[in-house]
Image (tube, rainbow, N blue to C red; front, side, top):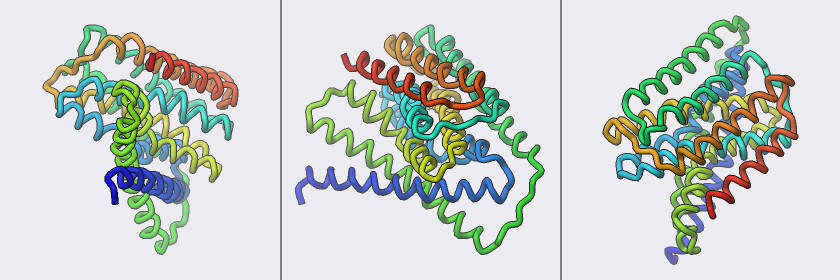
Length: 311
């Protein structure tokens, strides 16, 4: 078997892993939400988000260790933009949904503040230890808010013990399928792009950022099919908060306490991230639902953004 054919086969295998893993993962997460009485929005914003953010975390950390700081920062920020302007947009275009304004206000607010704060903290051209600590504080606030919200829910549901082990296995297996599938897609996708003569900059803003966001995409698509839109929205917002408040501070620590931020990231990537966050959250807070028009606007912005980056 030729090396080229093996690359394409592994790429396809990665797709199979994340599609099947996403199906199992959403099933198990929905079951957890049902039997625990915890709102699916909360489950999506915590447990699901942490698992589906692992590709971004691992890619950025490995990039930092290898000294590829532009890739580390671009992956984290670019993934947030892709999550909102591509994945959330697709989700609400196909399945517009009502939102819990209280939950959206808190989580959407933390996401917007994190995006704006990241620009302010990076304006010197680097994200230092103190800046990272501020972002980690927001991450801690996000976790605390979710634990508090879960604790305030007093509903109780009878649990059939025979289903517990099955759903735990499905949850773990689904998460592993998503993570390893995304890893295969990113690595083999990069090789395929190189073989096709695509530049490294284009690979970075497309294959890496979008590739590490594939778990969120698969979870969103699977949630749409299963009509679990709240789980999808919660997952995307939670994943974005983790990307902005946990991944970059950890990368800063790994790199040596000060993570350089280039001008393109500061002047283009981060502002676009903030703009799409505002467009996604503010109208939904005012109307109480995510509308198709918002999704269409986000898609257009993302296409323009990719076009500008690739020029």
